[in-house]
Image 1 (cartoon, rainbow, N blue to C red):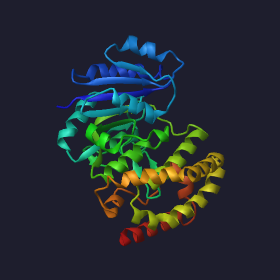
Image 2 (image 1 turned 120 degrees about the vertical axis):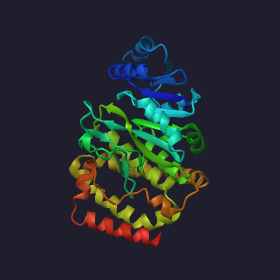
Image 3 (image 1 turned 90 degrees about the horizontal axis):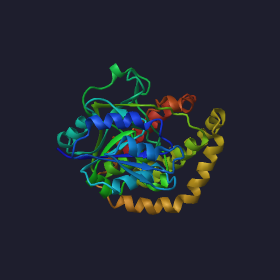
Length: 339
């Protein structure tokens, strides 16, 4: 059975991490590694982590370079065949590591897979496998649903949640891991799509469960990163034929998002994100050329992992605009037929 390198990126996580470390201590084996990468915390966390978990390696980066960059530091410090990216506030439940470990042999075509992540208490779902819309929006699928409604057997998903995500090291290395430029938000979606382009499947393992203290609302900075990084993912990963077919809808939806974001109070970060996309477009295109060199699947196969339904509660305002839901379903049928 393969070893697992558990990588946890922390930033002022002293209150959250003890429960996660306690759960890992009960499940880890001699072939597993645990690395805590601290991004310039000011809460005394690193010293507390070293005292509480002497079996873990604590790396202090000295600066807050973001989640993606922190993950790279942790992965580079480990050797195990499987990499588990775990949020400091994601608490593994019994059997978590072994279920994720066993999946490596049971699903050899999967490049990455996630646990079934619940909200605190375990009675409601945080995500049973994330969904990605053809316009590049990603969200925690099943959020708020009773855990009893969750799938009970492994299945493929749109993308794996970085809250509790396993990646084969060979897949991570071939894809180049996360894009550090993202800083935070959307790295898991982008990496999952790049893995799918390279021929890997992405899945969820319901037998592995973790409780996550999740809250969507974080402030303007989150909307900025979500929107900027969404365009990095679209430009970087979407097959050329698909991207050209989607271009009219992408541009129209950008206009529709302006009144939606204004009413919801995040117009300023949306405008900042649009300006950042224009400024960074040359870099996006350079990244796209590198990604295209790894592609092994056609546009139709890639499109199979996307959805036309904006059924996320976090995007309800956009989906509620008159005619939007029906229009996007019809448009997606036409696109799929042309592919």
